[in-house]
Image 1 (cartoon, rainbow, N blue to C red):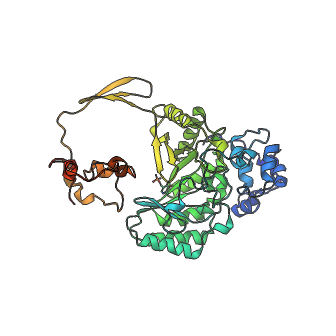
Image 2: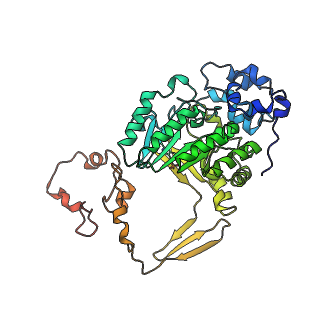
Image 3: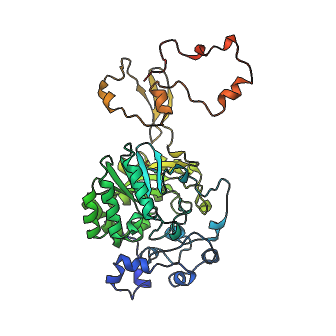
Length: 441
Ligand SMILES: *Cc1c(COP(=O)(O)O)cnc(C)c1O
């Protein structure tokens, strides 16, 4: 087991017996959220006090377990920065948005985000065990008035039933693991009744905020709904405690594949050595680093943002330098609903008709000789596997030969120069003569 960060529980919660401490309901009902509560366990700065006293600030709540992972003597403690608001949170910045990923625009029914062809994000609650200050969904998260209603859940299920292209449902919120156990089980069993849903995923920070929630009983319940995957959210090695290790052990023994989604945060983990330590500790507790996200352009998160170059530098320091299993993908979730875009350093330096030039993680420059006798599509049995993605065109349709180009909006009008239709403008001129013609389906 990795060396756990020394929890401050013994100092600040010495009167709480194990039986209470290890009860997740006790953790939830004893969360800290005011200046008075928090000042009992750590001295607040003026900036933190001011933020905590501001009306309308994104909800604050911290479990006693998680707050005990903070070093009270370090005002810049990485755990503290993630969970205790500071005055900077109220500062606006260029390009800041309420819903930077345009999730609400991609919701066919409330709480269901269908952005990608074969998978959906299902927001099942607005509540969390504790609230991350950089939350991408702070527009709805934490607000009990925004929580999803029974009718909305039925609409989500109904949409999924009539949308057979969806084979992967990602439960998120809020945090699905704060739902009452019965409701969570009902949700999973209702999803499992839909034959085309192949995998279910849960996105949760509960194992990190409140590892005692991951009881054997919960794991026994989850195990009934396989194939089930789970992504947790750890940002800094200090969050990898003995308790979290025990929780991930129970989950993996129940056959649940665990991944981690971290967010690149200024002052918390924007350093290659911290990231390497983080991914090493994650694989030791059998959690595979999945994504490292660039911080979104969301209200309240301005002071956490780093340049994208920092993310590239971190990836440069991971790939090749450590196990492939420990290397996440670095992702910019594009504003305006562009979706997840992976970024990495350039390894392809140049190419000719028969050779490519590559560099490795050490800066060694090499060549790869291309085959001269390659016949594509010899493995021709893929025809029955080809899956039409309703409404999805784009690069795939260019590669498949269904389209020859993609035009920006207004392209025709601009290039028509307000001219007239005349004999030289015959449309057939711009159709390929046989070879390369778009295929008729
Ligand atoms: C992140 C996300 C998913 C899942 O994406 P993967 O890359 O498959 O993990 C699905 N839907 C939405 C809207 C998302 O933001």
